[in-house]
Image (cartoon, rainbow, N blue to C red):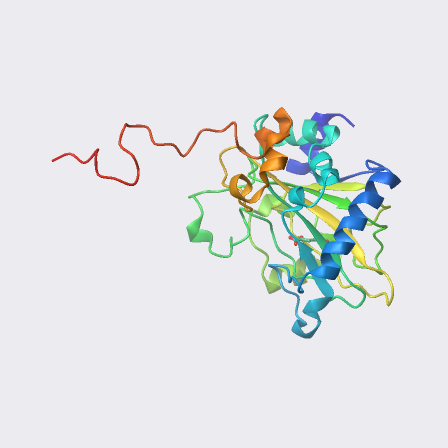
Length: 273
Ligand SMILES: O=C(O)CCC(=O)C(=O)O
């Protein structure tokens, strides 16, 4: 499939595509080893989208800011096929909004259907620009399957074509569209690319012995503020050895906001008397 065809599918087709066998067993092993260590060490980290069952929230773990956690994530975030597709979809100077792991442990409850940043609070429609619609995208998500995703272990669900509705799903929407729901099942190393306006959610992990882990990468057009603060959150060692692509992703090539007169922000030199 061509880059154009992928973009058409994200925009006007189902809103998501699966690409098989993008990452090798060796790359997955490196990523899984680090993430397993992080989730063993850290306090439970709940996701920003909660499922219905609060008693089981500790069975979902999130590891944020992966660029600081290992070189493998620095490589994954710059995967060349993904760079081509996202660069066409969001414009060539796109940036990184977030890279995190989402692990659904056995018995983990999953999430409710939602849309992703910067659309994440679109239930307040009035806080978004007049006439906002899906026709030019402010988000592109990539999910890297770190182990096989099955219907049993909580493979992400997705509601095809809902990106075109450009709205946060309510209870009634979910009832009306549930027959059309599909699952992003696949093998470890596959990736899903989707437009974050497409309703989706992690599903409950019904197994008793398999953790379902994914890396979630959020890409944004150059002018949208990243969700994770890349410039201050990413370690200087990562920044100092960054490729030109990574520097772009971290927002170093984009000059705004900027002070455009001689006055310094913190003093009154520029005040007109
Ligand atoms: O892990 C998943 O399957 C989906 C996670 C997700 O959609 C999110 O946390 O925004």
